[in-house]
Image 1 (cartoon, rainbow, N blue to C red):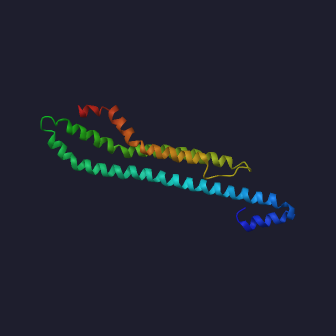
Image 2 (image 1 turned 60 degrees about the vertical axis):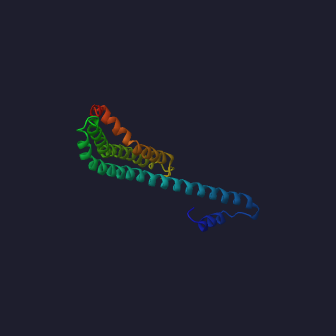
Image 3 (image 1 turned 90 degrees about the vertical axis):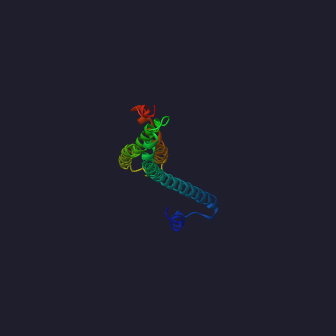
Length: 175
C-alpha cells in the first residue's frame, strides 16, 4: 500500500474483530520492516550510482591534470635528455604521456561495454514484464553488482593503459 491511510482502510474492510489485534500488529510490523528494507536498498543503489559517476569523473579529471603536467614537463625532459645519464628521461616521458593519453579511449571502450550490458539487462527486464507476477525493482542485486563492477573497472583504467604501452613496446622507450 502506498500510504498508511490506504493500508488502514484495506484492513478495516476485512472486518477484523478486536481479538485479531495480534495478527494486525504483525502485519504492521512486517510492512514497516519491508519499508525499511526498501529504503535501505534505494539508498544503497543511489550511493552506488553516485560513486559510479564519480569514478568516471575522477579518472577524467586526473587524466587532464596529468596531461597538463606532462605537457609542461615535456620540453624539460627533452632538454635534460641531451646529457649523459639522462638519455632515458625523454623515453620515460613519452611512455607516461602516451599511457595517460590512452586513459580516455580505454575509458570510452569500457563505457561502451557497460552500456551494452545495461541495454541487455533492460531488454531482459522488458521481457520479464510480460509475466503479470513480475514486479520490476530498480534496486535489484544485479543492478548493484553492475554498479560495483563499473566503479572498480573505472579505477583499473590506468593499469590497463600501462599494459597496452608495455605490450606495444613502450619499454623500448625507457631502455
